[in-house]
Length: 69
Image (cartoon, rainbow, N blue to C red):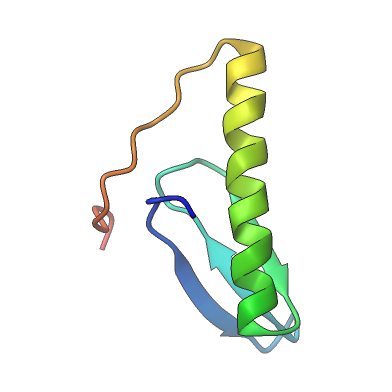
């Protein structure tokens, strides 16, 4: 499990739980259940990091606290 901050909420419009990872730009996931959304978010975080490495982009360090609130 990563140490990145996660924002999890229910989207009435999407009829799914949504997960945003504010420390990683455009990193989001969704799922029919809270648990599914959380599991998908962990996968997306790993994919985001792998893609950033492949492209030679910086990987932001997890701060462990929400900085954008």
